Length: 138
Length: 400
Image 1 (cartoon, rainbow over the protein chains, first blue to last red):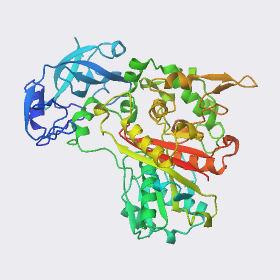
Image 2 (image 1 turned 180 degrees about the vertical axis):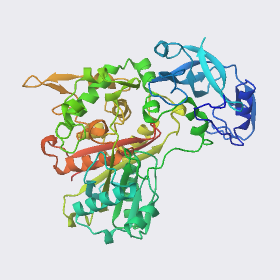
Image 3 (image 1 turned 30 degrees about the vertical axis):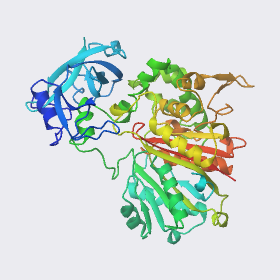
Image 4 (image 1 turned 45 degrees about the vertical axis):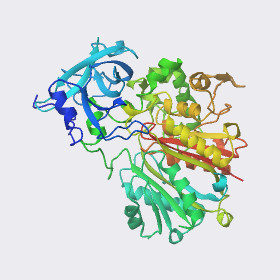
């Protein structure tokens, strides 16, 4: 895992709880009462007209749908080796709780991906420090 | 809102001497050469420039490089539509007396990478929430909204392929177009293409094949603007700014509110129409930023030329010409002339293409376009996105 080739995120103080949660295999979402969970992490609610700074973290179910996607044929790390070649799916996942996030769909044949298909989270421990939220068909 | 109408004019517009592969020129040299060419086009000397607007460079960098000390600067750099936004800001600056002669410059070593800054911070929102999923530049992100549009409205790859074929037909009439028959031999992919050729070309990032994607080039372009009172003092016929709009809708494409509608296009378009006092029915010619085939389809829908969801069939409509040739809806002879320079798809795309769209609008309005001149162009729209439908800029320009 030390030689992971893909690009790695670096947390900010505001997003640290999100990345810490993933490392524990929990999808934690910043949540406003009453607006609900949102993505991506900010210290305030981005819902138009709200702007509340009273934010808690709640655990999401990890279930969602493919909102839209592409099938990249580009050899972009980590999808650039014989073991892990392109094509691969980049998808926008709409979580059951409402927010949307970019991810990869783990699927044998990328061309079997469908808009609105049901998916669930897979915690990909790409390094000792970083876990990426990916998804697979249910 | 109509107070900007017809108050400021573009009096100079030009690209760099060449476009394509220019490894002998840096980013700032491309800014400078395009500035020289646009000033020559207007017949204005560099010493008269007192307003400077640019993207992909800090205004101070360009000012120092050129050896000028402008009293008005704007470094709005939000991607390809930055230059539409610069024109809008230059109109306001000239009307306010902040400057008299505004120079807008673009230079980008998009292919050769000579002083081309790249990448962002791994701690930025994009670095944390998009880059780790093997994003590989615009083909993997500008494509993100497309399949949602297909899903909701039945748009197809065949529809999009017609836009590429129509745009190539314009390129074949433009001696400057990189993929046109003047510059590129058929065995190297130049010259006419059919929608089937687009579908048969190499897959880059589904739903985009190679010929759904723009070219990648080095180049630059520049504009010179002055007040309407002074506009007739220069070498060429003035092109007046009738209306303009801009918007910032989101930044990361995953956070786009609705992947089938570019909110920024709507906001910018409405402001442009309102300030011009015109609507889509009044526009004779459209330059819709085409980084990919899907990009102008979204513009035609969100700027009101065709109802939402009907862009695919609209652009796929063809008829047969007198010599049996296929006439595409947006191609030469078609009734929706669009991207008449050959577009980002087939003419040139440096990374921030919007400048070239404006230059073509100016030339069509002046009647300078030779074989590709569209008859009776009096009002032209130049519109583009910045980022992945993230920001937007819209101009309505006219020759009277």
